[in-house]
Image (cartoon, rainbow, N blue to C red; front, side, top):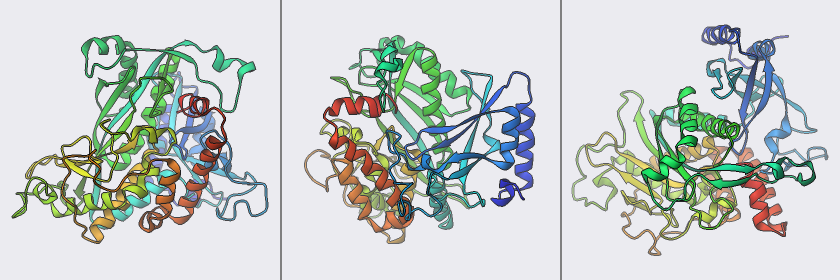
Length: 492
């Protein structure tokens, strides 16, 4: 019987060369285990740690993975009745907690800087016959990028990701078997800086021991970290990354979030990408996604306009953006409500959309305006012209966040949509309101035929059911604050 690599159709001379290189690195003295990791629906890493010999075999044959891992809600409960007749009829290939196979990508092998005896490879799931599992979120982005490439375009993304780092003062409650729960409690923590002093050097100096771990971890993994900054909120920081192609950006953030949480934990810190940690007087964390379109045949920024459109003024999109850029901007606006659950996928994250909080409330764009949902940056002739989407939370699955931008933007291009005038009053009450809850956002997604068609009906149905499970448990919880401590702060 052919191995999974052959059954999947991925076998090639380039893949053979990558496997040979990975095998040579794995056979170096000191490397004992290799983690095979996959990105779940919520953006977290799942996988298995293999011996070097088993990892070498897995590059051809894959390793087994229970299919229910793709159907878990944010508490790790399976959102589908997999053992009941008809419970997975909407999910062909799933049922009875059957096996899938994870196939690692040998080109992603790296050594974990906080644990040099362990290597790491990113993987993707396949059915046993070698067919790709289309519910895999990285494949959702692959399909979106293929549509974009068919239009002669690529997407470049720069990431600004806010998060919180706390020093662990007592981990006993989290690890005490007498207080175990599903999900369990977080550790007791204290802040690493007092906050409310944006870009303060003294706050940075207080936080520097933890930020040095973040820096070394990111750079050792080859991630294009540009800066680490002290944010407004207590114990809040921000990581900024240089722009890359969209898939690389998503892969990088997947690796970064999971790596820094583990590296910091070993040094006595608790890092969390939850939007709103469960403390008074905090500031919400957002993920600001900078995006520009690239002409594949030339590499030029397709959003750049040589000169302002005739008759346009500063509040017109055509004053700054090319026609392609304006159509993309208008597509993002047209599908903003539908994309909200993909960009802000937790109940906790919707607490961020507050007036005058540097987070959007309405479907508006502005010129260099950090209160608007979409911030257009640049001028006519500026090769760095781009759009910043400020709707996302830092816990979002990066593959889904980026895929939502592509399907929305492509619809703007296909229908040559035009953007309204820019806002100079983002909290003034104008514009259609963004969803105010995860439930409302899911309804908007289901009602958006463009996003449903782009993402796939089966995926949207699965995503909505998993997220509905999360909402139902939250609604049933007697202590909503305790729910968020356990569900998000302890795990995200």
